[in-house]
Image (cartoon, rainbow, N blue to C red):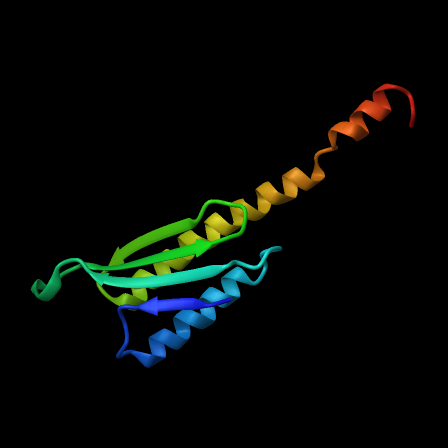
Length: 117
């Protein structure tokens, strides 16, 4: 699965950390994500202040894209916040998938109602 990381070209250690943690967060999914994008933006520009934004977009087959954002003073803190939100979103995704698989299917219920088993 390709992971595109933009906005932190000079910080190699953070790039490696971001790639490693995104892969670890997406590993438990039953389907392989098509693509993951992590983008860092400086909202305030050269003014400084709390304005580094981390946006994470994960594209999963047959589902809408999952997009989360977080803003903080440093790129690492912004990524940690976005990763926490992404993990909660992925947990909801897994719960929905599990609930759908646990529900009895229509043909099974009809067979039971008609006395066939």
